[in-house]
Length: 171
Image 1 (cartoon, rainbow, N blue to C red):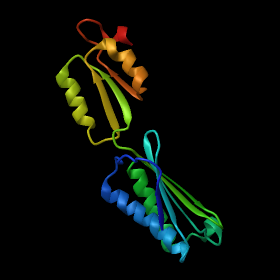
Image 2 (image 1 turned 90 degrees about the vertical axis):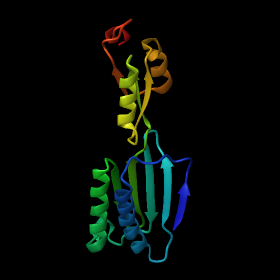
Image 3 (image 1 turned 180 degrees about the horizontal axis):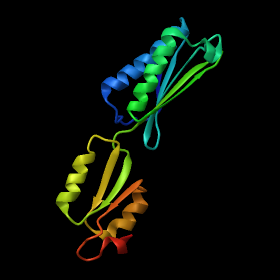
Image 4 (image 1 turned 135 degrees about the vertical axis):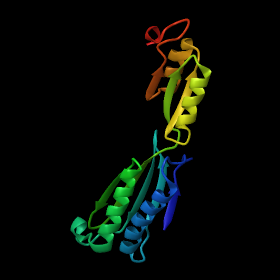
């Protein structure tokens, strides 16, 4: 087993037990198929996700060669990944088995919140704590455009009823 970490990898927004079981299911297929050969595992950060790739020797019959416990393990890994809002792509060729597990990274999707009420802003930050969202908040509508340019948010939450300028003007 050879493991490569490509760079600083963030934590994933996935229940640790589900992640462990999905990885064990994939590794059991890869190691069983390897029969003494090398299985490579690489982990890399993507803009909003973490990608885990397993690669090893292929199945003699390609995808038709995956059966029994191996098929059950792959199905288990696929279901767990979907429950965790991730993706699993599996390629079972004659000369190479490859599984790519893509999972949401913890606090990586930027969400810009423009809200004049500090308590509401703090509440929104608390709600998304431990999820894949990262709140960039401001009480100053004048900062909205600069923050949007700087962080390229995927979501913007905008209070439309603010004292000096309303949200429609900011929009």
